[in-house]
Picture 1: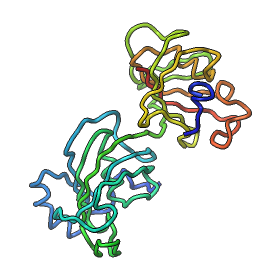
Picture 2: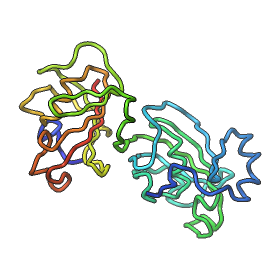
Picture 3: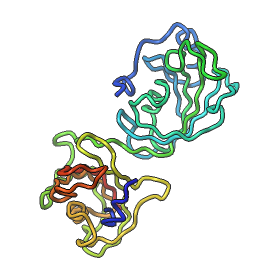
Length: 270
């Protein structure tokens, strides 16, 4: 994480989340068994079920960054001798092909805090190739637990959320909090994720440390962030668009933020 906070005190695989090819004969032949076990079918051939739901936020989608625990077994539940046969932590961006396609499809049916089981037919796993102890054309059973989810920034639908202008900053109010609007000197807990115009994540607070706690002071915040927070209440969630002159201006913040960058933030104040 680049330390914007320390400076200012906040200082595609297109099919990845859209199903896939039709089910294989193998998956079709096993459909009755999986359905009886409570699995849901997907047009790609994936079978999935949520085993535990303490969900937070929106569903995972193409372009999002996800951190999750993963374990793989054979379809009957027996272990395979690979590094993935023990639960390991993975951090990926959906749509980059960093895991097998079936895992990306399964993650796109989940939210942060959920646990799921996935049945991957060969064409969504390793296909006709062998992988360690996994034999060619193997159907695999994955267990997944999503630990954190950083959504990619997306423009809200026109007219769906109230739009607020604040000295050049545009805010979309996704959730309105309670109490008075924040003012100078208030101490707040802020969860944030910041993106460039191309959707690239450049900084975030959503990690093991949790939200960032700091006072609202004009001389210690990025101008655009200061303007955004002065329009929020505790409990609010907004999407903010900060123009270059209220962000890092002509200088940018190399190497992550180019010169004259418009910045896009997801902000939640607790």
